[in-house]
Length: 453
Image (cartoon, rainbow, N blue to C red; front, side, top):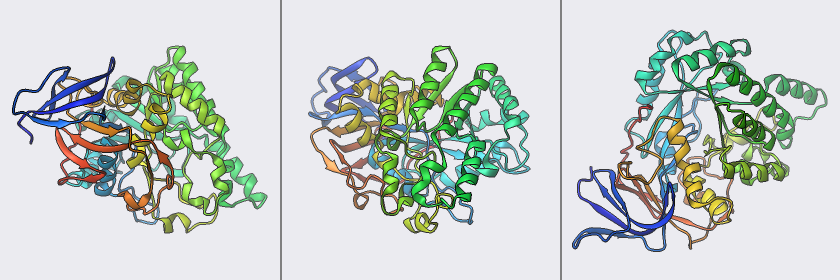
């Protein structure tokens, strides 16, 4: 543990009230002070002139060491996934715990922590999945508080993972009673299944048809329904990985009515389009929801700037390329892509450097709102006195081309291959300790579990 004071001097800092060239004093893992002052003579100084300092990103939607239907796992375990995180400027991730049949909700958290503890290079928290896989006693959800979990994840599709529609009102009421938030994967399953039946009957099953097989209308329908439940119950709702402008506008309109609804989106929904499914091996870029249109991209950027979409996450869930290519159809190809290592660079380059977001807005979308919503503030999500010294130093004058060859995912390929960004992450600190420099990890796994408050 760092006990001496270290001064990071001269960076342009993304502060809550603006951007300013500052010195950051770090002591015992915390930001001791931040502002315009000179370090004392003989102090340990990190010169950061020409660099930009952001709070470490909070990627609040990742899937590390995720079980698959065949008894295996996706490509990145907690070690490699968290290595991607710190090398890219993410110092906190939030993953998911699953319920255990016949056991307490806290047992699911305990088992997930046993898989992660000692393996993670960044700090981490957990959400709890509430599924339809077996009967789950929601009257015992209060057990999650002592386990440090404050968010329930539901799916409105995905077979047994889908939470039964008729039970949703009771779940929302219980979440409100217990002050738990609901994070929802929103695709209307009836629309998905009807589309599938129609396409199968027509023999239209190729992987290139992925976007058509999960239409934009399915997302909007599910978002509309769950916003209605949130409005009726008073429960707080978070819409996961918004892919369409229509869904984002539904969130914005509900927020204007005073509904407690929030949203996240992902870099691939901001920057890539469904036209890529016409390329060779479209399975590489299959995720759910699918990529959408350039018009959706543009509207999502507007909503991100306004704050109606308040978070950028990655839904990092990569698979080996042979796993992705094993099935040739849009109905059989495994969904999920990586991206945790590129979150900060993509949003800095395409958001801040291209004028779509101010520096404080960037920090808020990458860190601040997620830290508050998920019970991790005031320690995470901000450059401020008393916060954890999770600091990312970015060189805005070092453009580069993204390539899997220089990244750390076990997947071995990237949906961002060849994408040019206008910056480079130089140094990353976790609670005052240097954990990454020059895009490579430093030291051993020192991440800790964060109890949501």
